[in-house]
Image (cartoon, rainbow, N blue to C red; front, side):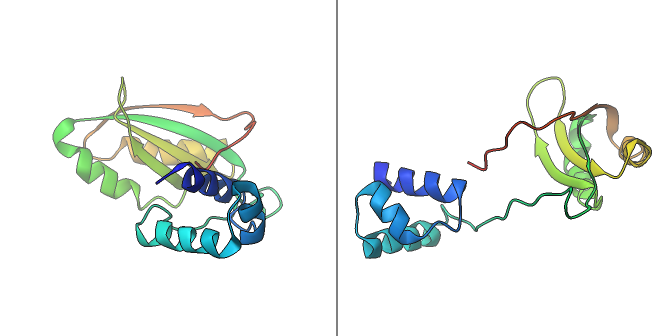
Length: 144
């Protein structure tokens, strides 16, 4: 992968619907060459899909965004991770380094629902502790 591929990926990450002709102008390549490069990046699994950024407020989706950090007993981490997938309020789940083992991105309607999620997560076998933080304002989000 060269600098042209990197630039193509950067442009697609910013706007997955950007026309190939516009990418071609930005990277100084022919449109057909850009299309071939994108296809190759898809075939290699570097591009795994294309996402849409949604305005959750306009869609009347859960508006309260929170992070929940979890400490688990090491032998039960995989079981806890599998169980976390059953919570529809959990939008992202990552294993992390540091004082905690797992970080969740949680979206709920309100603090009462967040409290319910935290209670249920805390009750999972192997969970030792949780710590949560409510996101007050998201300034930006990068996909790459």
